[in-house]
Every structure is written in C-alpha cells, then in structure tokens.
Image (tube, rainbow, N blue to C red; front, side, top):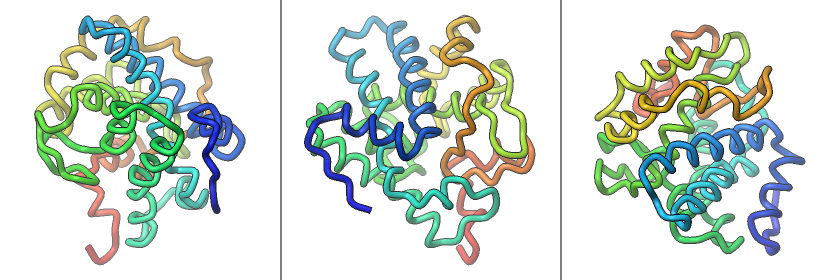
Length: 228
C-alpha cells in the first residue's frame, strides 16, 4: 500500500481515522495523557505542542502494517514481528514528509526505545533518549495497559501505574515514572469515553492480564518469536 503525504499531519491523521481507527483512537488518548504529564514539568508551549503532535503521529507507520498483524491474538512469526517493529521507521518517514518538526519526528522514531538500552530501533540508552520521547513512551504504555484487549480486561489505573513503576530505570525513565505517579487519577481517566475502542499494541499476545502485560515489554518480545 502506498501513502501519499503532501498535506501535512492532518492528512496522516485523517488516513489513520479511515484505515486504522483503533490506532487513531489510541494516538489521541496518548496525546491527551502525554500533554497532561508534560505540563507538570513547566515545559515551553513549543515543547508541549511537540509532545502533542508527536503523540498523534507516533503510530503513523502502522498504516503500512498488515491489519492481520495488528489484530493477531497469538504468537508473531519472525517476519510479522519485523514488519510490526518497522512501524517506527516507516512512521518517521511519513512524519518527515508531512513537515513535522524534528522533535515530533524523534517521538515517532524512538517511542519504543528503553531506558536500559534494550529498545528499538536504535537501542538508545538513558539520557540519549530525548526527554519528550521519554514522556510519550510512558503514556503510550499507560494507555495500552488501561485499554481493553481481545480476551482480557484493561488494567486499572493503579495496576497500570504499579506495572510501570516496577520498570522504572529499566524500560522507563525514572523521572517520568515519578511524574506519572504524581498525577491525580482524575487526570488519567477522562481522556476518552468508555468503553474504549479495542486497541492492540505492539506484540501483545493477549489471552489474560498477566500474559498481556508481560508481553508488552519490548525486551521480552523475543520469546514471542519462534526460532529467536
């Protein structure tokens, strides 16, 4: 499938709405959540806008991922995982062609990096991950965990925060996790009418809560790929 991007980010968002509505809904929730967290750090209006736009576009590359892979409830083959993982590099190309800022493109490219350097695509370590990217990464995970997945209920706000807190310093930036924990629940629970649209995040083989949450960790996804 070829996507012509000439009218800016609005065209990407319109295409997501039409072709990947579940991804679009997730991206909008992440934008709301990430902006709320970013404002707690006293960032400039320009930085807040970068967070908002980067969040809206962070999964744009999933336009070129086969729907069957996004919706699969089960193991991903090596080829399927490589196609899915490639959405960050595809997405940053689309965002760049659409005229997104450098900071927004960094969010699109690096939102699956891990603080311990075990993420993708570039295995950036701790402070090498841009600060705004770290904010979006945490809120991307939070929304994924608190959204319903096929065959399992979403985690509660407290359970999702606990899950993320246990991974501070490994998957997530400790300072951003502290910010998430400091937000009142009311700022985390009203960014979309419930029930939320079904959204299948990267690599989820969701059959129950424990399996689904553990499978979310990028560093653990190798166990989902036969022969790796």
